[in-house]
Image (cartoon, rainbow, N blue to C red; front, side, top):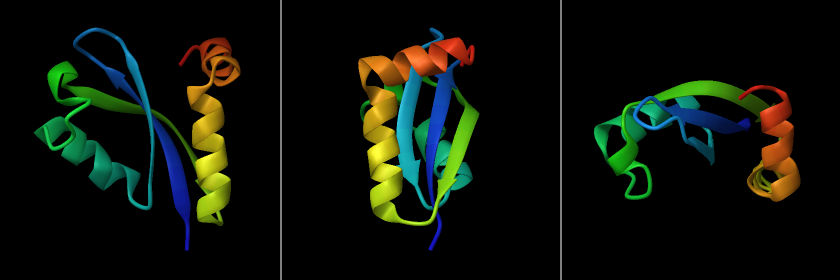
Length: 80
């Protein structure tokens, strides 16, 4: 099974959100519909980046990294 980490950008205030899903495009729709409490107030969102992984553990590890200070700096260097 394929897992994805994804990065969203808020068009409201330019903040980033990092998440994980098997279906990132569907998940984006859920974020924009207001189903996620932590992102509801910052809609609309656009998908700006995603990575694919073969295992859930690999995807979780990458998500944790991208949410860390070093991971945020990595996304900044990519201008994301």
